[in-house]
Image 1 (cartoon, each protein chain N blue to C red):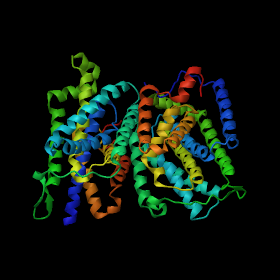
Image 2 (cartoon, rainbow over the protein chains, first blue to last red; image 1 turned 90 degrees about the horizontal axis):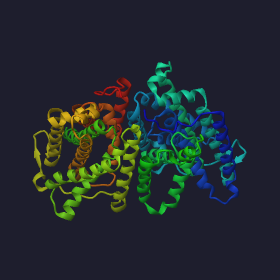
Image 3 (cartoon, chains in turn yellow, blue; image 1 turned 180 degrees about the horizontal axis):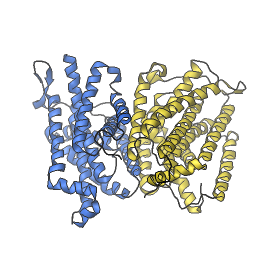
Length: 322
Length: 287
């Protein structure tokens, strides 16, 4: 049986403690960003993608399911939040809720369909479903096709926090990211997460132990899709638009790449991977399509020589769970 | 009625591309246990090689039909030797990720040099013009594509199901270790199989060049539709892939006539319906 992740590492209270320490360090570091002069827009964008990659990682790293269509949750939640904010003029917190609800419903439908097949078929089905949605959004009137939804009002969160101020927006996005991250962390370390890992390692055995594996995988899919939708709703406030790029298969590919670079099945890997890939896109923005070529090369290199990813390698070296 | 027949013909042509591509995917998956995400990019390379042969070497369509699959097939075999073979024994998804990376590289390089617009490729003189069939006007080239693809598909089916070489191939798919024990060079067969599958994709690319123009992203969206075709038909049977490919092309053509808004999505919708009714696919076993 080939496994995705490094399983020599024990899941002990010490591992949990290590992970909590790293989490607190990460939170402090991110909270200090506005005082360092780093461009906050870049960090906010990276945080949204980091949350998306973490949600994706919940499915592949702990459920062993490679979704090649996670952009559909990002894009759907983005479109619905944007529509709610701009056309219905809802306040930000309700706008986010609309987006999350849309992603939740979508993940129930797509999960019900795609969970029916395993392995490589699952990947192809999720990819095809997201392409189906792409064409629907291309033609649906409310998405405004190629133009997307532009100039979305940021408004006041809970009536107090003015999201048009970059620093306020930054902390709102940061709190959203940390909340999502903690939820995923909690899921992974719950009994549910343990069963999920058992299914990833040996599904027939999990079935023989009496677990209804399809239900576990379905629930993991819905959780992952809904959290990906949360990332999409947050991203609307940062980018102030919702467009077809967010639903395209290239976006699904980028999420996979972020998680792969950071480390499949590691807790902090997707965050690091998202920052690396977003930074790379920023610096190489002037090189046109060479960015695609470089991304492809990173895929190839990671798969051939660097399957543990950045955090996976570090964790393996120090023999810690990260 | 004219328009209906015209759309049916377009459907048959798309169906022949679906058949050629899903056939190659099925053959490759059988031997390498890899879903070749680079299939669309290699289809595009086939069209570009034909374009280069004509414009740089003055080599005509007929030679391109032979040479482009060989050239792209050799390129594929190099990929297999240098990269794909190292994935043996790893989880299936690494094959998908690796070939996705290869597809990004190939498509990105071509986009850098040729942008996203299409390059024209002229229909060869012998296949110009059209025939009046009484009920419709049939452009000769389009008829040729359908007939020739069908012949190639059936020849591939014959090669795999009815010949000695095909028997080795099927045996190696079932149990490579045992076949090696009989003194057959299985790694070489795997390489050749990848070359064959990729060659079929390149052939489809050459056939489509005069119809769809030569574009760097011509295979990018196509491969996703072909994935849906593969999910519908399953990868267990060669004939199943051929029939599903053509059938879905025709259904897509009919949709273009009766309800054009859904023509982009009909294959995906059918995939959803098949999954709901018969989750294992039409011909496949549980996977």
